[in-house]
Image (tube, rainbow, N blue to C red):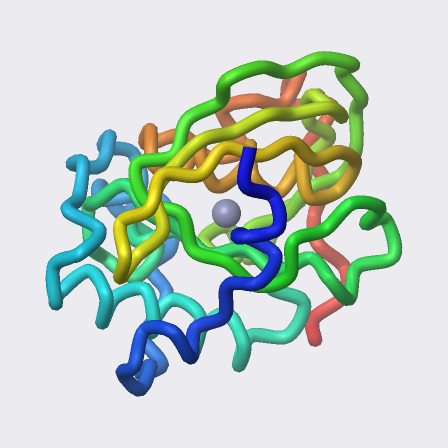
Length: 184
Ligand SMILES: [Zn+2]
């Protein structure tokens, strides 16, 4: 477990300036394909990590962004749920490469949205207790940590993206999909 290492990570470690990229929308095929594993130490991946964080930061309400959402079909994403009211445990801003779920429990249903599906939200059942592992961009360090509540939900949503799945693939049915009513 290196919870503290993940919590201490910031994009400043990457040593490159992030660029704001355009976000791809469904039904673009890059969103429904499983991403390729990445070498977290390669220069391209370090730059992409910085770009993901920069793009998340300029997008209001965005708590996570996967590489395929900016058109790059690889297994990595950023997360930052610090400002969200439903967050309990949180690890600040971080980027994970080649992430996977190690353990999950306590399913809870809650409303979810996605920048790649801007007009809809949906009720999705996700584990409220989660352990994940992955690698940090730049150093390539392997990390494994546990979280809960909204950060656990965000991680499962992002790991789904790396597998080519959208929240729409997880909703209980058409009755659990709603039009988004607020545009910020
Ligand atoms: Zn999403």
